[in-house]
Length: 102
Image (cartoon, rainbow, N blue to C red):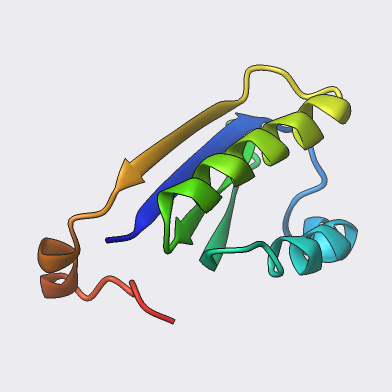
C-alpha cells in the first residue's frame, strides 16, 4: 500500500521556469525525503495556488513529511495550507496505469 499526499496553498509566484530556478534547491532536498517515491509539483498562476502531489511508500514518512512541510511553508509566511493524506487503492490504480512503484 502507498500513501498519496496532496498539498496546496496560496502562492503568488514565481511560476513556470522562474519557479523551477527558484525552487531547484528545495526540489533536491525533497528528493532525499525518507519514504518518498515521487513528487509532482503543481502550480496555477490563474488561481494563485501551488503545491504538490507526493507518493510515499509508508504512512509514517508521509505524516512526518506533512508536518515538516507545513512548518517550512509557515516559516515562509504562507497560510491556509491544505494537506491531505490518502491511502492508495493500488489494484484499481494499476488498471489505470498509475506509477505506484519506483
